[in-house]
Length: 174
Image (cartoon, rainbow, N blue to C red; front, side, top):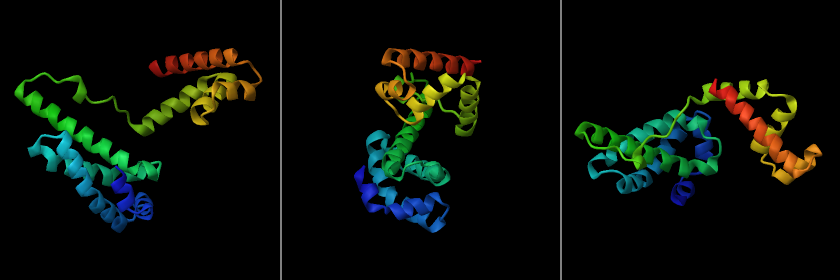
C-alpha cells in the first residue's frame, strides 16, 4: 500500500481533491498499476480490468470526499476490493450460486443524508448527553479524560455515554 503514497505526490492528491483535472489524471495514472496488482489477488482473472476501471471511475468521482491524504492508498484498495466482490456477487447470482458472507456488501448510506440524521439525533439529546458523545466520538477523549473534563467519576462517564448512545440510536431508528 505504501507504493501509491510514495509514488503519488501528496500535492497531486490534494490538488485532485480540490478539483484539478490534470492532478487527478496523474493520481489515477500512478494508482492504476498498483490497483491492478491488488485486483489480480482479489478478482477472477477475467474481471481484473473491469474492477480496476470501475474503481478508477469511482475514485475520480469521490476523491473530494477523501478526508485524510495519508489514507489515500488504503482508500483505493478498499474501493477495488469492494468492486471485485461486487463482480463476484453478480457472477454468482447469474450462475445461481450461493453468495457467501465474505463478498456480501456492507450497508452503505448516503453520506450527506447520514450526516443530517446524526446531526438531528444529536440536537434531540439533552445537552449533557450531547456533550459526552461529542467529546468521546469527535474529540476522541478517553473515559478518564471525559470524567475529568466533566467533573464526574469514570463510572458515571461510562453510564452517561451509554445512555446518550442509546437515546441517539433510538432517535435514528425511528
